[in-house]
Image (cartoon, rainbow, N blue to C red):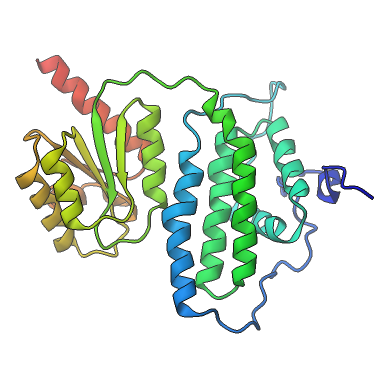
Length: 300
């Protein structure tokens, strides 16, 4: 019988304890553990692809938040948990794509925004598959199928963001990059989206070297440089990059902000490393930078 486009998963009820309706998936430990370990070169190559290509594309697809909400006046917020993400990742690999679409459509009808679908479900599932791959808990085929289907779903739900008007920007330019030597790029993609939605002109470097960063600030005008660090690079190395940026920048009034996991608990650490300030998330980074320029405007 032809696929109806809904799939068997669409017929299950959604409970408060199981908002994605995935509790009946069998074999929760779905990645085979007895497979031969993948070739190290393949594993590291795919991990880099997930970080540098797939996840940034997922995040860069949208341009503004979808503000649609369910019509009911008292809708209980749907919280997406780590288990929900793990179960959805299994669905992406094991069930028909129509089943995943049916679930996401159902969540949208219940008030889940397109932004939440992309960031909390699709992007989170891509990261989850990457972790399973690095831990040798998934095969190459599993990850390839999963990422391919996530990209197909992105093409379905991404236009909800494109339909929103882009804010009028101030013409300011920001250079965003991960700290040279670091590999984690997902957080940077999130920050990029927040700056774009705030109207900034954004240039991003997801896997830069120090000479590349210095060449950018020597030859192009940037009002702000934002660097993301997860802790893979020593504090002395971060301080050295910040100092070099200040010495070689075309804009002598350049502002530098540091963010990422390293500064999540203590943003003030960024100041000790030579930055203007630190931010523990993307929204705070944009708010802090905008306040900084508003104060400068008033003082003039």
